[in-house]
Image (cartoon, rainbow, N blue to C red; front, side, top):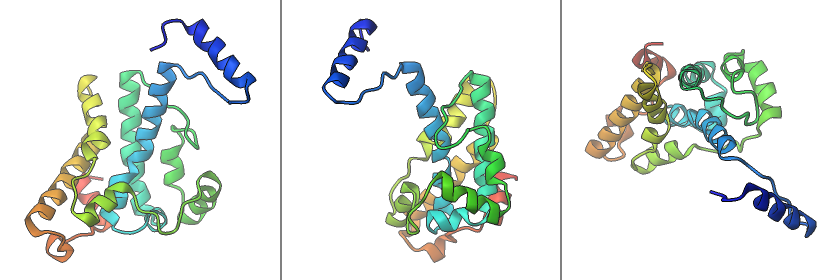
Length: 196
């Protein structure tokens, strides 16, 4: 917290004069950035459930449709909470539509929005592969919590949290024996579980 905003701005000007680039970011814009980043992170459980790389997950329409459903629901929760998420790479309100485009068109657009390493895996997928607990409560769980705080509901994100927790429990019971756990899942199985 900066006690005197004018002094802080002067400090930033002095830094710029020395060649150090600075930007003044208000706490409100930081919150908007964090909520924008949360939307992007809603992809983590989708990628984890697929069991394949980020590009391979995004190449499948049904996986993107699941991500779009989580994103769209989060936007509705944000609206109820009076949150306007920051634009990160693309307008957050357009992303559900972009994600639902035919794969050939989405992949062309994605090439210009964000280039991804062909072997990239989300942190949640890496947690699954290593038998670790995931950050699901801080991603989709945060959407659910925000919905509850604002008198609304987030059933898709709530079911996603439940699904990830059930796989974590199976990991605890069976170790990393994916065959015993029935993991990875197909997008059809996930759609059915989420009620899409």
